[in-house]
Amino acid sequence: MSLIVARDLSVSHGRRPVLSHVNFSIEAGEIVTIVGPNGSGKSTLLRALLGMLRSSGKVMKKPGLVVGYVPQKLALDRSLPMPVSSFLNLPKPHSPAAQAEVLRRVGVPDVAGQQVADLSGGQLQRVLLARALLAKPDILVLDEPTQGLDQQGEAAFYQLIETVRAETGVAVLMVSHDLHVVMSASDRVICLNGHVCCEGTPHVVRDAPEYRALFGQGTQGALALYQHAHDHAHHDCDHDHSTGKDAANAG
Image 1 (cartoon, rainbow, N blue to C red):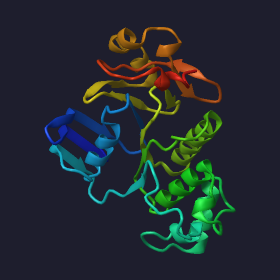
Image 2 (cartoon, helix red, strand yellow):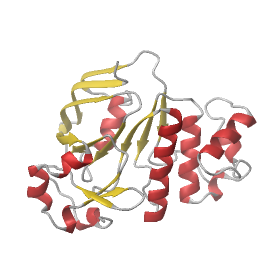
Image 3 (cartoon, rainbow, N blue to C red):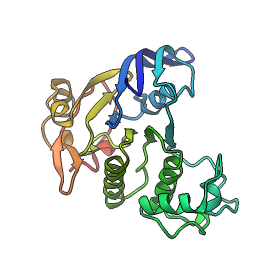
Image 4 (cartoon, rainbow, N blue to C red):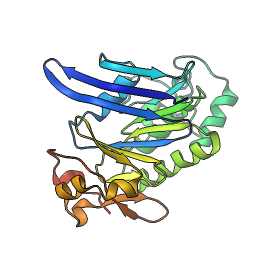
């Protein structure tokens, strides 16, 4: 069965609708990337799917589903002394061998003794990923995991996610902070703007007429696919309020 299925999912903040009648599913081993302009409900959708906020409609999860969640921001006081090894033991302890293995897998094998506050942005994202992987999840849920990284760091992180999926078979549900950049290994891209504007493989979504009507067919409308080289695709949305900043990293 599917790992997570949502039917007619809606979320409001007070009287303001944020998500309307979203239908969603993700299968075992699948990589799904959610894109959309600021305020389109991307993070809200993740939290609703995980049961972290109230919603209407129906969300069904595979019995016993284990979720590894990588938040948008680290909800820790980074001024507090905390070595990486202690951070990885939250909320439950793991053996030094398990920690060492997962840190090796995410490409930061030597940081266990470092303070979390001293990590670079790229190192911190990999440590957050390592912590999520320690739970041996069925699905990794990543909320804008590359925000704040430069283009090289973003590409490296995407490649790491592809490798982790290939090695472990974990499903990946990820919000991309950049409307125009998704991982080439995405099986599906969902373009969200309060509702699902369209979804499909990156190359199918690229040709959606709604997207072309909004973004045109020039560079502003190009979706950079992180592969070993840049490729191009598109996605679609209707009425949004994105700015040129969203397109800054378009390939």
